[in-house]
Image 1 (cartoon, rainbow, N blue to C red):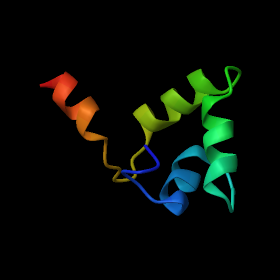
Image 2: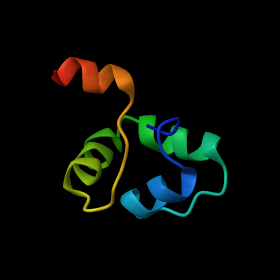
Image 3: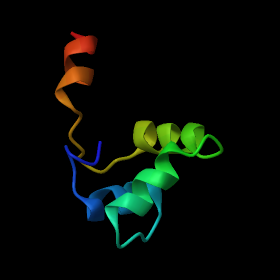
Length: 59
């Protein structure tokens, strides 16, 4: 998701304020946060891009 979107955009979607992409990735992949992250991405009204492999899986 981070490669398809900016750090700033994902911070907005997730309600976070990470200055470093590594910290955001750590937050997003931590087992305790995965469900919350997925729901925030699903529910966002922000325009976000999805990686090609997700688009291909949906088609």
